[in-house]
Image 1 (tube, rainbow, N blue to C red):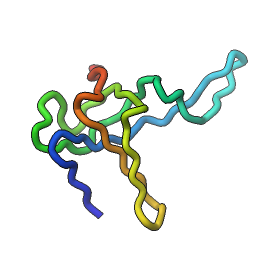
Image 2: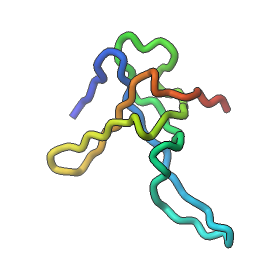
Image 3: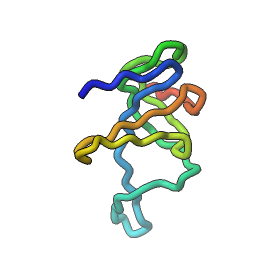
Image 4: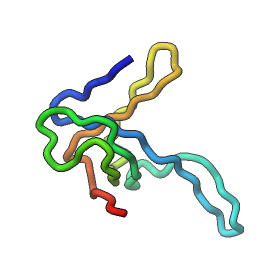
Length: 90
């Protein structure tokens, strides 16, 4: 299945999240809804001006749209360009 974002939307792949406890244990899970998350841009719709495929970004998790295929095997994530908090430069 190929997915193409509509104008103004960006398809992203969120980074895996691990939380480290005070004792050094890592716990997989979700961040709080209001916390920014990092991701890689997979595709951009027309009218997107500030990011391109392959860019790394911080975005607001509360604004992300998650779409799952009917069989439940794949998830796709989309955000609007205005929901990007920052670009990440290595």
